[in-house]
Amino acid sequence: MMWGTLLWLVGASLGNPGAEEVLRCVLEALSRRFPDRTAHWQVQLRRIPSWPEGKPFRIEYAEAQPPRGLTLCWMLEPQGALRRPVVVYVAEFDTVWVVSRPMEAGEPLRTDALSPRWMEVTALEGAYVRHPEQWQDAQTRRRLSVGTILLSHHLERRPVVRSGQPVTLLIRQRGLEISIPAVARGTGPPGTVIRVYAPDTRRMYEAQIVAEGIVLWKRTL
Image (cartoon, rainbow, N blue to C red; front, side, top):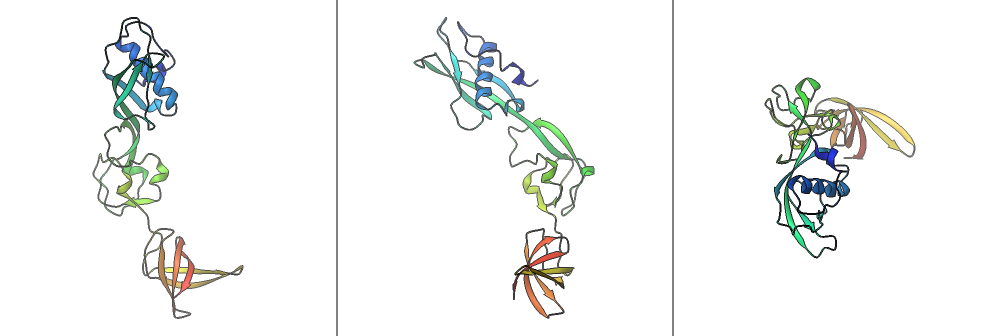
């Protein structure tokens, strides 16, 4: 269950607070600060301080970054003179992509090899892949086993030009464009600068890969 559904119930409370009351106030405080993140959280109380009976309180979260894992909030009276720590655990959930069959290094990412899963990512190390757009034009950097959570460092952009491949060299100058048949002397995805050789001119050029089989002249070598 996501606690976000309770966030509107309590702002500040009176009397000797119970755990449920304190939790509601913590959730309300976090919701005010980070309204776009609350659907991704489950919050658990770990420690509640003693509090004078009958004294009103409010909960404050003072850090600039969203909470994750063990988190310190503060229980304060309305004027702020009395201040005591409240320890909570914020479990963060998100959609990750999980490898569903063994994959070899250099293999293009496809839907038959990956499946989305909603899971806790609080302790997940490394930047995980959240959206299909992050892997649709990529390939694996190394072998991946079944059950592996897809991380950014598992991926590399898929080459669209390979060394020895025939390519079209585009030369654009002063509003004019000419194309020359050439042979790639490097490999890479779009944006990579490689060398190409043009048999017709017997010259070597430095060019940037712009699409599959197409490179754009940068300079003549």
